[in-house]
Image (tube, rainbow, N blue to C red; front, side, top):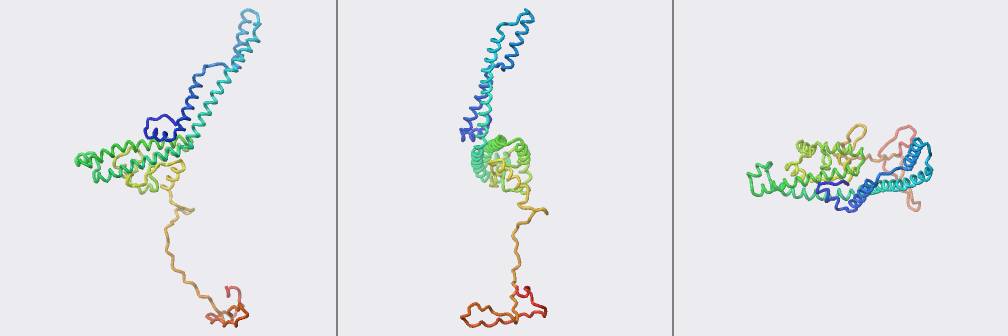
Amino acid sequence: MRSTTNPELTAAWATVPDVAKAQKRHEAAVQLRRDFPRGKTPAEALADVRAEAVATFADTGKWPSTFGKDAAKAHADALVWEAEFLALRNLEDVTKAAAEDLRDSLSVDVLEHLDSRLTEILDAAKAAGETLGDVTSAEQAIEAGGDALDAWRRLTSLLKDYSNVRDAQWDVLRAVSGEEARMGMRQWRDAGHGEVRDVRVDEIPSHIRDVMRSRVYTVEYLVWVAQSGSAFVPTSYDDLEFSVTASLEPVAYDDHGPVDLSPRVLPALNPRPAKTYTHSRTPHLDVSQPVPESPKANATHSDREASTLDYF
């Protein structure tokens, strides 16, 4: 979760305060690591003591008698510094992973909140659009005045809210997706996907698709999407991918192309009556009863030897 000036995104993340808390913990860990004074590793500390001893010997011809003591102290001090430095760096990594895991697991809640906000905005836009009637420009709204002008002003203010929700949607989806998924989402977003579901691309008017691609929203677009009843906020990458696939590809297809799943009316079946031959007999299932009469023959067989095909 990054800092943002988008009020819709701020409000959405506020619905899951645990994420903000984990993010603050990570930021505090980063600051601790940055404020920690620069020190030397044990190897660097020993190298400095050796270099100083060698320089002293080169100048005086005498080896420092305290070399062992100095080397041991430098090494011990460096070990203390390195232990805390490594611990702080591990703290930064752990808090980052914890914040990211929590953000990923709770991102659905944030996106669902954005979807509910989208519904509120579009409900208001739909009502204002009905009041607007045939007015399609600011000039016409001013000329019409009254309720039409109020509706235009209302729709104009809702445009900013709608744009903020869409920006927040993509921010969250990018934050919880990998690099490869982010590349795919960028292409889908630029192609106008992620705005409506259950609508094929070729069913959307061209001027509306242009707005989806540019994301420069207009009053006309806002009214259209509100009246379509198909606007949504994807709750995950998979949800977005499913929507994109459904809008581009046929519902079913095989190796030969699209499969037409439209219901088909088949002709009524006329069953062939069973064939009864002169030698046919009615089964006598109960010996305590009289032998049943033989059935009336309705077919003859050839002189060839009878086979199972003649009886089944």
